[in-house]
Length: 192
Image 1 (cartoon, rainbow, N blue to C red):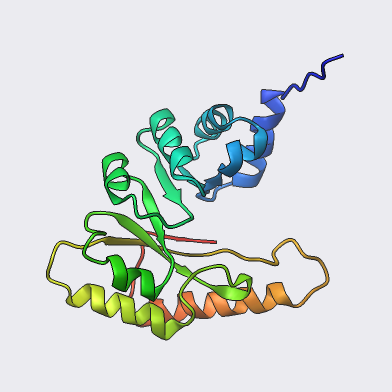
Image 2 (cartoon, one colour):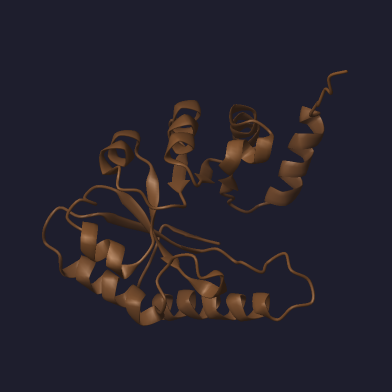
């Protein structure tokens, strides 16, 4: 006997709208939209008014752009396939100061979102000083250059109950955002 899995689109839409409320949302659709099916999920999110998506795979990011050509599509993992990012207008994480120093000349015309590391320790800028360093170097660069569009982090402990790590991450993240804002830095997108 073969199992059949069905998704009730009415309930799916209701769930999306409950989460969204009056907020702008970036839907994470990595890993085939958590096995709901990438095309199905993207179309459902579009129907609910969501116009920004993120994934970890360049191939998936391209697929999302083909489904939703006017959407913001954010690649959470860095890549060096810069021509494809430009071709499809895909935004990408800027994972570290080292990555910036290695590829700054090749990142021209690519929208990047500066990643703050936090307690997950996968990737990201390690401190406010590192973030300010890249912002200042970018500002001083007179050549064709990347477009710093966003600032983001990934909370490693957001769904852990009864642990202090999430509060630490949240405090550190808000401190980064508020400090940059107080110093006059602005981003089109700030997300976590």
